[in-house]
Amino acid sequence: MSIRQALRLTLLGGAAACMAAGGGAQAAEVSLDEALAAARDNLDLRIAAHGVDAARADIAAADHAPLPQLSAKLSQIDLQNGIGPGSLLGGKRIDKGVGLDWTWERGGKRGLRTEAARHGAGAAEADRDELRLQQLLATQAAFFDLLAAQGRREQLQAIEGSARQTLDIARRRMNAGDAALQDAARAEVEAERAAADTLSAQLDLQRAQFVLAQLTGRGDAATLQAHGDWPADDAGSEATALEARVAQRADVHAAEERVRAAEAALAGASALRQGDVTWGASFDHYPGTSTRQVELRLSMPLAFGYHYDGEAERARAQLGQAQDQLEKVRALALIELQRLAAERTAAARRAQRYDGDIVPRSREVAARAELAYGKGALSLTELLDARRTLRAVLLDALAAHADLAKASGAWRLRNGA
Figure 1: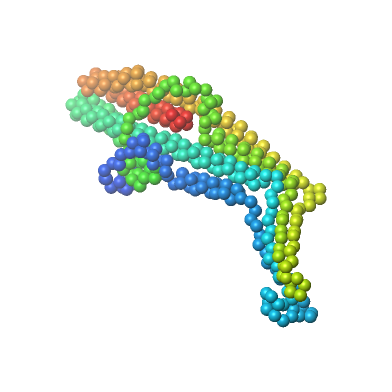
Figure 2: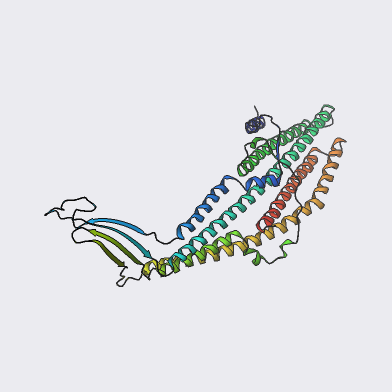
């Protein structure tokens, strides 16, 4: 077995293994809108939604005063002389008491604690929105990758068909004595190479199907097919100042909420310097002395030189960290928008050049070469060169459209268009 035949069998076996799950089933078409709708409710976003629910629950946990403490006691139990006769509650000489204690938080700790939790929940919601956008961006890119893979396979299948026709012509000319055996051998190699490229394109298609299926949560990856055309680019929408768009981004909003939460946490750490006061009262019952005794209590911490400086310094450092993170997120957001705008403009120009000039001229040159070779007016080498050029141009044009679709779609999604 030759190396060429072994390569072809290897690629054919890989493609067959990838297609086995499909079992020849009917293609499951999915549009871009359907793919994006599925990506909005995938498992990653459900996990993030639970995180938001937990953060909202933290608000309820923070927004309440310390609970009153109920206490009961038995004291003054005389183990030397005994506790006397009678019932436990009414006659025996045991001091029985029931008390209630409540802590008064000073310095607005409850409000600051609640404010920090509220901003933490806001940051969690913004993180969920940013994750949703990232999922949509990835799904959109996967959809266009699948659409490009389908087009690439079709192009290579057509090229393989042309190579097979050339091989037939070369064999007929060789049998008629009009071409050398070397030309027929080269045509056969070119046909086998085109077949190998087709199989490679099939494998790329399968990979794109599985990526899109993973992002959308579909179980029909082996038969998944992107349905739709390349979207038109709405040029000119990047006229709005990029700085204004930065403030509208979810990742920037999340960083801002974390700064506000850190500010509230710093104010809460400073409020620790105002000690909380615990009020208490108890009702005592002691037969033989008095059955109606009342005790009043008041307690508060004594700092004695410690003013919670460590807690305040830590909160201040965390605030500085959050502020620096916000500055970083804003800078990266502006750079990303500038990159998206530049990529979109460059991709649009590239696609227009291919559609308007390069592809038509390449098709014309290849068609003339095919006609000339069929009439014996062109050598096989020149025909193969023309065909390779056309193949490269068509694949590059397809890649240009895919790049434009992804760049334009990413710009629209990122800016809420």
